[in-house]
Length: 418
Image (cartoon, rainbow, N blue to C red; front, side, top):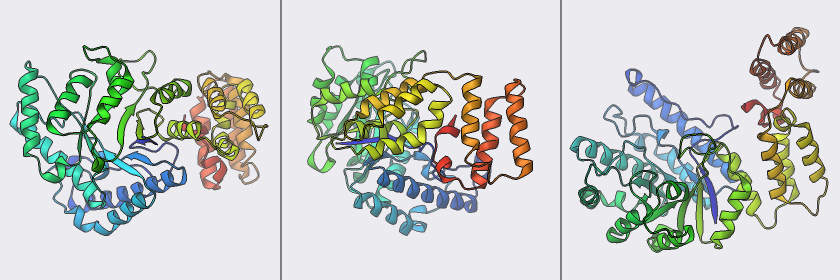
Protein backbone atom coordinates (compact mmCIF):
# COMPACT_ATOMS: atom_id res chain seq x y z
CA UNK A 1 0.00 0.00 0.00
CA UNK A 2 1.14 3.50 -0.86
CA UNK A 3 -0.29 6.62 0.79
CA UNK A 4 0.17 9.97 -0.93
CA UNK A 5 -0.85 13.61 -1.25
CA UNK A 6 -1.65 16.05 -4.02
CA UNK A 7 0.40 18.72 -5.78
CA UNK A 8 1.84 20.95 -3.10
CA UNK A 9 4.36 20.65 -0.28
CA UNK A 10 3.72 22.41 3.03
CA UNK A 11 6.67 23.79 4.98
CA UNK A 12 9.39 22.95 2.43
CA UNK A 13 11.21 25.77 0.59
CA UNK A 14 11.88 25.71 -3.17
CA UNK A 15 8.94 23.43 -3.89
CA UNK A 16 6.39 25.88 -5.27
CA UNK A 17 5.10 26.16 -8.84
CA UNK A 18 5.46 29.55 -10.51
CA UNK A 19 3.34 31.05 -13.28
CA UNK A 20 2.71 34.44 -14.86
CA UNK A 21 -0.03 36.58 -16.37
CA UNK A 22 -1.02 35.85 -19.94
CA UNK A 23 0.31 39.24 -21.08
CA UNK A 24 3.77 38.35 -19.72
CA UNK A 25 3.92 34.85 -21.23
CA UNK A 26 6.84 35.39 -23.59
CA UNK A 27 8.98 32.46 -24.69
CA UNK A 28 11.81 33.70 -22.48
CA UNK A 29 9.55 34.04 -19.43
CA UNK A 30 7.92 30.65 -19.94
CA UNK A 31 11.31 28.96 -20.37
CA UNK A 32 12.48 30.50 -17.11
CA UNK A 33 9.33 29.40 -15.26
CA UNK A 34 9.42 25.84 -16.64
CA UNK A 35 13.05 25.47 -15.59
CA UNK A 36 12.19 26.59 -12.07
CA UNK A 37 9.10 24.36 -11.84
CA UNK A 38 11.03 21.25 -12.90
CA UNK A 39 13.62 22.14 -10.26
CA UNK A 40 10.80 22.42 -7.69
CA UNK A 41 9.32 19.09 -8.79
CA UNK A 42 12.73 17.49 -8.33
CA UNK A 43 12.86 18.89 -4.78
CA UNK A 44 9.38 17.55 -4.06
CA UNK A 45 10.38 14.08 -5.25
CA UNK A 46 13.49 14.26 -3.02
CA UNK A 47 11.30 15.16 -0.03
CA UNK A 48 8.95 12.27 -0.83
CA UNK A 49 11.84 9.81 -1.01
CA UNK A 50 13.29 11.06 2.27
CA UNK A 51 9.91 10.66 3.98
CA UNK A 52 9.00 7.30 2.42
CA UNK A 53 6.10 8.77 0.43
CA UNK A 54 5.46 6.54 -2.57
CA UNK A 55 2.37 8.20 -4.06
CA UNK A 56 2.17 11.76 -5.37
CA UNK A 57 0.00 13.88 -7.66
CA UNK A 58 2.02 16.27 -9.80
CA UNK A 59 0.56 19.76 -10.17
CA UNK A 60 -1.01 20.58 -13.53
CA UNK A 61 0.81 23.92 -13.20
CA UNK A 62 4.19 22.29 -13.88
CA UNK A 63 4.22 23.78 -17.39
CA UNK A 64 2.54 27.23 -17.42
CA UNK A 65 -0.11 27.42 -20.17
CA UNK A 66 0.83 23.81 -20.94
CA UNK A 67 -2.21 23.06 -23.12
CA UNK A 68 -2.61 26.55 -24.54
CA UNK A 69 -1.48 27.85 -27.92
CA UNK A 70 0.12 30.68 -25.96
CA UNK A 71 2.92 28.30 -24.98
CA UNK A 72 4.71 27.47 -28.23
CA UNK A 73 7.80 26.09 -26.49
CA UNK A 74 8.68 22.45 -27.16
CA UNK A 75 9.42 22.02 -23.48
CA UNK A 76 9.48 18.22 -23.74
CA UNK A 77 12.49 18.57 -26.03
CA UNK A 78 14.23 21.54 -24.38
CA UNK A 79 14.01 19.99 -20.90
CA UNK A 80 14.21 16.35 -21.98
CA UNK A 81 17.23 15.49 -19.82
CA UNK A 82 15.94 17.30 -16.74
CA UNK A 83 12.55 15.56 -16.97
CA UNK A 84 14.11 12.14 -17.49
CA UNK A 85 16.33 12.66 -14.43
CA UNK A 86 13.24 13.38 -12.31
CA UNK A 87 11.55 10.34 -13.84
CA UNK A 88 14.51 8.15 -12.92
CA UNK A 89 14.22 9.25 -9.28
CA UNK A 90 10.53 8.39 -9.35
CA UNK A 91 11.19 4.95 -10.82
CA UNK A 92 14.21 4.15 -8.63
CA UNK A 93 12.21 4.93 -5.48
CA UNK A 94 9.18 2.87 -6.64
CA UNK A 95 7.03 5.99 -6.45
CA UNK A 96 3.77 6.28 -8.35
CA UNK A 97 2.65 9.65 -9.68
CA UNK A 98 -0.46 11.01 -11.36
CA UNK A 99 -2.04 14.21 -12.66
CA UNK A 100 -5.60 15.48 -12.35
CA UNK A 101 -6.85 18.07 -14.89
CA UNK A 102 -9.19 20.70 -13.43
CA UNK A 103 -12.92 21.24 -13.62
CA UNK A 104 -12.78 22.93 -17.03
CA UNK A 105 -11.42 19.84 -18.77
CA UNK A 106 -14.77 18.43 -19.88
CA UNK A 107 -14.62 15.70 -22.48
CA UNK A 108 -18.40 15.23 -22.83
CA UNK A 109 -19.33 18.90 -23.31
CA UNK A 110 -21.93 19.72 -25.94
CA UNK A 111 -19.66 22.59 -27.00
CA UNK A 112 -17.09 21.38 -29.55
CA UNK A 113 -14.56 24.07 -28.61
CA UNK A 114 -14.69 22.97 -24.96
CA UNK A 115 -14.11 19.37 -26.06
CA UNK A 116 -11.14 20.38 -28.21
CA UNK A 117 -9.59 22.23 -25.27
CA UNK A 118 -10.21 19.19 -23.06
CA UNK A 119 -8.45 16.91 -25.54
CA UNK A 120 -5.51 19.34 -25.73
CA UNK A 121 -5.34 19.36 -21.93
CA UNK A 122 -5.36 15.56 -21.70
CA UNK A 123 -2.60 15.39 -24.31
CA UNK A 124 -0.59 17.92 -22.27
CA UNK A 125 -0.99 15.96 -19.02
CA UNK A 126 -0.10 12.70 -20.75
CA UNK A 127 2.97 14.32 -22.29
CA UNK A 128 4.29 15.16 -18.81
CA UNK A 129 4.17 11.50 -17.75
CA UNK A 130 5.58 10.35 -21.08
CA UNK A 131 8.41 12.91 -20.82
CA UNK A 132 9.26 11.58 -17.36
CA UNK A 133 9.69 8.15 -18.95
CA UNK A 134 7.02 6.52 -16.79
CA UNK A 135 4.92 3.47 -17.61
CA UNK A 136 1.14 2.97 -17.69
CA UNK A 137 0.81 2.70 -13.89
CA UNK A 138 1.16 6.49 -13.71
CA UNK A 139 -2.26 7.94 -14.49
CA UNK A 140 -4.27 10.98 -15.57
CA UNK A 141 -7.52 11.28 -13.60
CA UNK A 142 -10.70 12.72 -15.10
CA UNK A 143 -14.31 13.25 -14.09
CA UNK A 144 -16.99 12.29 -16.62
CA UNK A 145 -18.23 15.88 -16.95
CA UNK A 146 -21.70 17.44 -17.14
CA UNK A 147 -25.19 16.02 -17.67
CA UNK A 148 -26.49 18.79 -19.97
CA UNK A 149 -30.13 17.92 -19.23
CA UNK A 150 -29.70 14.48 -20.78
CA UNK A 151 -27.29 12.21 -18.93
CA UNK A 152 -27.74 9.35 -21.42
CA UNK A 153 -26.56 11.53 -24.32
CA UNK A 154 -23.80 13.03 -22.17
CA UNK A 155 -22.44 9.57 -21.36
CA UNK A 156 -22.62 8.64 -25.04
CA UNK A 157 -20.61 11.76 -25.96
CA UNK A 158 -17.99 10.87 -23.37
CA UNK A 159 -17.64 7.37 -24.83
CA UNK A 160 -17.39 8.69 -28.38
CA UNK A 161 -14.72 11.26 -27.50
CA UNK A 162 -12.80 8.76 -25.40
CA UNK A 163 -12.56 6.37 -28.37
CA UNK A 164 -11.03 9.16 -30.50
CA UNK A 165 -8.31 10.05 -28.00
CA UNK A 166 -4.68 9.27 -28.92
CA UNK A 167 -3.62 5.80 -27.79
CA UNK A 168 -1.05 7.08 -25.29
CA UNK A 169 -3.74 9.24 -23.65
CA UNK A 170 -6.30 6.44 -23.46
CA UNK A 171 -3.91 4.04 -21.75
CA UNK A 172 -3.24 6.57 -18.96
CA UNK A 173 -6.80 7.80 -18.39
CA UNK A 174 -8.77 6.80 -15.30
CA UNK A 175 -12.18 8.08 -14.26
CA UNK A 176 -13.57 9.07 -10.87
CA UNK A 177 -16.99 9.52 -9.29
CA UNK A 178 -17.81 13.16 -8.54
CA UNK A 179 -19.78 14.95 -5.82
CA UNK A 180 -22.60 16.35 -7.98
CA UNK A 181 -23.47 14.42 -11.14
CA UNK A 182 -21.93 10.99 -11.75
CA UNK A 183 -22.03 8.63 -8.78
CA UNK A 184 -19.79 5.60 -8.38
CA UNK A 185 -22.34 3.18 -9.87
CA UNK A 186 -22.64 5.29 -13.04
CA UNK A 187 -18.89 5.74 -13.37
CA UNK A 188 -18.32 2.02 -12.91
CA UNK A 189 -20.83 1.31 -15.67
CA UNK A 190 -18.83 3.56 -18.01
CA UNK A 191 -15.48 2.15 -16.88
CA UNK A 192 -16.53 -1.47 -17.35
CA UNK A 193 -18.10 -0.85 -20.77
CA UNK A 194 -15.11 1.05 -22.14
CA UNK A 195 -12.26 -0.67 -20.31
CA UNK A 196 -11.27 2.39 -18.22
CA UNK A 197 -9.96 2.00 -14.64
CA UNK A 198 -12.19 3.59 -11.99
CA UNK A 199 -11.10 5.53 -8.90
CA UNK A 200 -13.45 5.43 -5.92
CA UNK A 201 -13.64 8.72 -3.98
CA UNK A 202 -15.07 8.23 -0.50
CA UNK A 203 -16.20 11.83 0.14
CA UNK A 204 -17.80 12.15 -3.29
CA UNK A 205 -19.63 8.90 -2.62
CA UNK A 206 -20.86 10.21 0.71
CA UNK A 207 -22.21 13.37 -0.91
CA UNK A 208 -23.44 11.82 -4.16
CA UNK A 209 -24.26 8.18 -3.44
CA UNK A 210 -25.66 5.66 -5.90
CA UNK A 211 -29.29 4.61 -5.71
CA UNK A 212 -28.07 1.28 -4.40
CA UNK A 213 -27.07 2.10 -0.84
CA UNK A 214 -24.15 -0.28 -0.73
CA UNK A 215 -21.07 -0.10 1.49
CA UNK A 216 -17.80 1.65 0.67
CA UNK A 217 -16.01 -1.69 0.72
CA UNK A 218 -18.43 -3.02 -1.91
CA UNK A 219 -17.73 -0.14 -4.32
CA UNK A 220 -14.01 -0.31 -3.67
CA UNK A 221 -13.96 -4.02 -4.47
CA UNK A 222 -16.10 -3.43 -7.56
CA UNK A 223 -13.76 -0.67 -8.74
CA UNK A 224 -10.79 -2.98 -8.31
CA UNK A 225 -12.09 -5.20 -11.13
CA UNK A 226 -11.49 -2.36 -13.62
CA UNK A 227 -7.74 -2.19 -12.95
CA UNK A 228 -5.67 -4.34 -15.29
CA UNK A 229 -2.17 -5.58 -14.47
CA UNK A 230 -0.53 -2.93 -16.65
CA UNK A 231 -2.51 -0.19 -14.83
CA UNK A 232 -0.88 -1.06 -11.52
CA UNK A 233 -2.73 -1.81 -8.31
CA UNK A 234 -6.03 -0.10 -7.56
CA UNK A 235 -5.97 3.53 -6.47
CA UNK A 236 -8.62 5.38 -4.44
CA UNK A 237 -9.11 8.91 -3.13
CA UNK A 238 -9.70 9.56 0.57
CA UNK A 239 -10.76 12.82 2.21
CA UNK A 240 -12.80 14.12 5.13
CA UNK A 241 -15.46 16.82 5.13
CA UNK A 242 -14.36 20.13 6.66
CA UNK A 243 -16.58 21.10 9.57
CA UNK A 244 -18.81 24.18 9.16
CA UNK A 245 -17.75 24.59 5.51
CA UNK A 246 -19.39 24.04 2.13
CA UNK A 247 -20.31 20.42 1.44
CA UNK A 248 -17.40 18.79 -0.35
CA UNK A 249 -14.73 21.03 1.20
CA UNK A 250 -11.68 19.07 2.30
CA UNK A 251 -10.65 19.17 5.95
CA UNK A 252 -7.59 21.09 7.16
CA UNK A 253 -6.00 17.83 8.28
CA UNK A 254 -6.87 14.14 8.28
CA UNK A 255 -8.39 13.06 11.59
CA UNK A 256 -6.25 10.04 12.33
CA UNK A 257 -8.88 8.01 14.17
CA UNK A 258 -11.37 8.35 11.31
CA UNK A 259 -8.66 7.41 8.85
CA UNK A 260 -7.60 4.36 10.86
CA UNK A 261 -11.20 3.12 10.92
CA UNK A 262 -11.30 3.44 7.12
CA UNK A 263 -7.89 1.78 6.78
CA UNK A 264 -8.95 -1.18 8.94
CA UNK A 265 -12.16 -1.54 6.91
CA UNK A 266 -10.09 -1.93 3.74
CA UNK A 267 -8.25 -4.91 5.23
CA UNK A 268 -5.91 -5.14 2.22
CA UNK A 269 -2.48 -4.03 1.10
CA UNK A 270 -2.98 -4.12 -2.68
CA UNK A 271 -4.44 -0.62 -2.85
CA UNK A 272 -3.02 2.91 -3.04
CA UNK A 273 -4.65 5.81 -1.14
CA UNK A 274 -4.40 9.39 -2.34
CA UNK A 275 -5.23 11.83 0.47
CA UNK A 276 -7.03 15.03 -0.52
CA UNK A 277 -6.50 17.41 2.39
CA UNK A 278 -5.45 21.00 3.01
CA UNK A 279 -2.23 20.23 4.90
CA UNK A 280 -0.99 17.90 2.14
CA UNK A 281 2.27 16.13 3.10
CA UNK A 282 1.74 16.73 6.83
CA UNK A 283 -1.30 14.45 6.96
CA UNK A 284 0.39 12.07 4.55
CA UNK A 285 3.36 11.52 6.87
CA UNK A 286 0.93 11.11 9.76
CA UNK A 287 -1.06 8.37 8.03
CA UNK A 288 2.09 6.58 6.87
CA UNK A 289 3.51 6.58 10.41
CA UNK A 290 0.26 5.27 11.87
CA UNK A 291 0.04 2.40 9.38
CA UNK A 292 3.70 1.38 9.66
CA UNK A 293 3.90 -1.76 11.80
CA UNK A 294 7.55 -1.35 12.87
CA UNK A 295 7.71 2.41 13.38
CA UNK A 296 10.78 3.74 15.17
CA UNK A 297 10.22 6.28 17.97
CA UNK A 298 12.73 8.50 16.16
CA UNK A 299 10.12 9.20 13.48
CA UNK A 300 7.68 10.58 16.05
CA UNK A 301 10.44 12.59 17.72
CA UNK A 302 11.29 14.08 14.34
CA UNK A 303 7.63 14.96 13.86
CA UNK A 304 7.48 16.48 17.33
CA UNK A 305 10.45 18.73 16.59
CA UNK A 306 8.43 20.23 13.73
CA UNK A 307 5.14 20.62 15.60
CA UNK A 308 6.28 21.45 19.15
CA UNK A 309 6.15 25.25 19.00
CA UNK A 310 2.83 25.24 17.18
CA UNK A 311 1.38 23.12 19.99
CA UNK A 312 3.08 25.17 22.72
CA UNK A 313 1.47 28.40 21.51
CA UNK A 314 -1.96 26.78 21.54
CA UNK A 315 -1.96 24.43 24.52
CA UNK A 316 0.72 24.03 27.18
CA UNK A 317 -1.26 21.08 28.57
CA UNK A 318 -1.12 19.14 25.29
CA UNK A 319 2.54 20.11 24.91
CA UNK A 320 3.33 18.43 28.25
CA UNK A 321 1.15 15.40 27.48
CA UNK A 322 2.97 14.77 24.20
CA UNK A 323 6.38 15.15 25.84
CA UNK A 324 5.33 12.62 28.46
CA UNK A 325 4.08 10.16 25.81
CA UNK A 326 7.42 10.30 23.96
CA UNK A 327 9.41 9.42 27.09
CA UNK A 328 8.52 5.75 26.67
CA UNK A 329 10.87 4.63 23.88
CA UNK A 330 9.70 1.01 23.69
CA UNK A 331 5.94 1.12 24.17
CA UNK A 332 4.35 4.01 22.29
CA UNK A 333 1.38 4.61 20.01
CA UNK A 334 1.65 6.73 16.86
CA UNK A 335 -2.14 7.09 16.84
CA UNK A 336 -2.13 8.41 20.42
CA UNK A 337 0.67 10.82 19.51
CA UNK A 338 -1.20 12.26 16.53
CA UNK A 339 -4.51 12.35 18.42
CA UNK A 340 -2.88 14.60 21.02
CA UNK A 341 -1.36 16.70 18.22
CA UNK A 342 -4.78 17.14 16.62
CA UNK A 343 -6.31 18.13 19.95
CA UNK A 344 -3.58 20.74 20.33
CA UNK A 345 -4.02 22.06 16.79
CA UNK A 346 -7.75 22.53 17.37
CA UNK A 347 -7.14 24.56 20.55
CA UNK A 348 -7.07 28.35 20.42
CA UNK A 349 -4.07 29.86 22.19
CA UNK A 350 -4.21 33.04 24.24
CA UNK A 351 -1.93 36.05 24.57
CA UNK A 352 0.11 34.42 27.33
CA UNK A 353 0.76 31.22 25.38
CA UNK A 354 1.73 33.22 22.30
CA UNK A 355 4.23 35.33 24.25
CA UNK A 356 5.67 32.27 26.00
CA UNK A 357 6.27 30.52 22.67
CA UNK A 358 7.75 33.61 21.03
CA UNK A 359 10.30 33.79 23.85
CA UNK A 360 11.10 30.05 23.48
CA UNK A 361 11.81 30.53 19.79
CA UNK A 362 13.77 33.75 20.45
CA UNK A 363 16.23 31.82 22.64
CA UNK A 364 17.48 29.98 19.55
CA UNK A 365 18.58 33.19 17.83
CA UNK A 366 19.20 35.75 20.59
CA UNK A 367 22.95 35.04 20.64
CA UNK A 368 23.20 35.79 16.90
CA UNK A 369 20.96 38.85 16.73
CA UNK A 370 22.41 42.36 16.65
CA UNK A 371 21.50 44.92 19.33
CA UNK A 372 19.16 46.61 16.88
CA UNK A 373 17.43 43.31 16.07
CA UNK A 374 17.03 42.58 19.79
CA UNK A 375 15.47 46.01 20.34
CA UNK A 376 13.16 45.51 17.38
CA UNK A 377 12.01 42.10 18.59
CA UNK A 378 11.13 43.31 22.07
CA UNK A 379 9.35 46.35 20.62
CA UNK A 380 7.24 44.00 18.48
CA UNK A 381 6.62 41.81 21.52
CA UNK A 382 5.52 44.76 23.67
CA UNK A 383 3.22 46.04 20.94
CA UNK A 384 1.66 42.59 20.71
CA UNK A 385 1.08 42.50 24.48
CA UNK A 386 -0.58 45.93 24.23
CA UNK A 387 -2.69 44.68 21.28
CA UNK A 388 -1.15 47.25 18.95
CA UNK A 389 0.04 44.60 16.52
CA UNK A 390 -0.95 41.04 15.60
CA UNK A 391 0.87 37.79 16.30
CA UNK A 392 1.67 37.33 12.59
CA UNK A 393 3.70 40.53 12.55
CA UNK A 394 5.92 39.34 15.41
CA UNK A 395 6.27 35.84 13.95
CA UNK A 396 7.15 37.21 10.52
CA UNK A 397 9.95 39.27 12.07
CA UNK A 398 11.25 36.21 13.92
CA UNK A 399 11.02 34.16 10.73
CA UNK A 400 13.17 36.72 8.91
CA UNK A 401 15.84 36.44 11.61
CA UNK A 402 15.65 32.64 11.59
CA UNK A 403 16.32 32.69 7.85
CA UNK A 404 19.09 35.25 8.14
CA UNK A 405 20.95 33.23 10.76
CA UNK A 406 20.18 29.90 9.04
CA UNK A 407 18.68 28.17 12.04
CA UNK A 408 17.85 24.87 10.35
CA UNK A 409 15.93 23.47 13.32
CA UNK A 410 13.50 26.38 13.23
CA UNK A 411 13.38 26.56 9.44
CA UNK A 412 12.08 22.97 9.47
CA UNK A 413 9.48 23.82 12.11
CA UNK A 414 5.79 24.27 11.26
CA UNK A 415 5.60 27.15 13.71
CA UNK A 416 5.83 29.79 11.00
CA UNK A 417 3.16 28.23 8.76
CA UNK A 418 0.29 29.99 10.52
